Image (tube, rainbow over all chains, first blue to last red; front, side):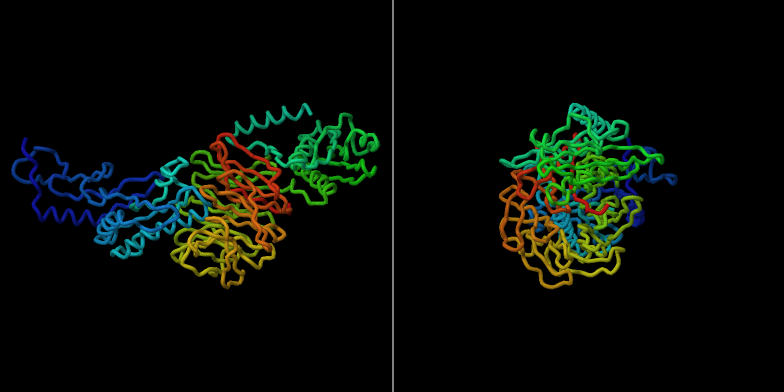
Length: 186
Length: 423
């Protein structure tokens, strides 16, 4: 079977630029969703009819952008999205700085990219204090992103306090999983 | 007496069928030698012909207070009866209640009763209330309040209501019930969390926090009509609504300036002014009964502790000094006692502090207490706690000796707030 020829490089660039401009605006539903950034058309990424033509790209070819499949090529989607915190703390530990730097890079290079940072807390203490703590954690992540070039209008901090736990148990193992800030695309 | 257990069983079945509505608060009296007034209550004449056995509600209310030892008067009596007080005294009964429920021509009901003091040998009270059928339960609670006040000298809270949140899976319900947990009516049903309900001082509205728009927003809802509007929806989280005693203002927690801080706003949501100016979390405001001071939680000193500040602004001063963390302040109606949750080790426990002397008292031996709220007579505190894996509501007297528990099967009960007297 013949290999699918790579698109001429200028065409690939044009396609990539056009698709990058059409940033996805899929609304979030209740369940965490994966990134829906469209796969930039690059070598090997086109699902055109295989082995059909000899020589160049067919004039009638249509490139498919499949939003329902997990995006493979964007580096943002392979980044972790959750920052974990110590009890009653909103300090971003060193081990999560690469995560934030990675997202900041993706977002600062494309000013149309939007995200929300959702802050959470474990169940200990009052719901209101935990709501504020979750907000503080989300704001800490947003602040770090802003320092690295992400625009204020690109990212919002919200909090769910202890209301949306990731783990339902009443022990430190569960609590540690709930003390978090999650970065979600908008 | 044989009628009551059957009714309770039926009520529980109905509660299960309706998907997790609450059963009645049940009493656990732990006080040693708590003195109780023995009272005999006769079935009200013709109550079996009305939609509600008023005497059953009356007996349950007085028994649940822990201050009465309730007996059923075996013989048929009503408010017209001649009571042989000496004979009742001989049987160890200090008070007798007898009455009737009469249906009027217009369909309403006339509830009449008398209260006799057998020790003094005289009639203490004689009253009549005319209500529509739907308010018969309320009338019974009012009778209980009047009997309670005549005997103890304190106003009763049987005719008050509480609001709380029921959570079952992804379903959240803001419920308004009688103080005994019965007669629950849904104020708000949502697929997203609801927290921090706060009764307006006139008892007509509930402020609360809803996550229905995927963030914390403060709403105000009229209880009777269900009309609702957003009170605070600024950038970030909006939460912890607390009413001023005159009902004209609310304190709220807003993160619009980058971190949770206290703000005051008029009840229409306007005239916003910032009250605290720290770089810390300031939240969970609670007005003193004279409206001049606001108690709140702040972690400006490291961990969350309770502070107070003048409602007109100024420098906050710290109030709690014991315990790793102190949260959720509630001030008693006489302004002398602060109820709150204190963290000791890994436990979060309900405590009170006398504001004048600073004396602290722990009220529970549970480890997961939340959300204390005073009854309007200042004699009881309702709070949420966890026992045997279930989130339940409890009430306690200020000495911790008489506790009642409200459990719902299949649902968690959270965030109780006791409503005011006016109804």
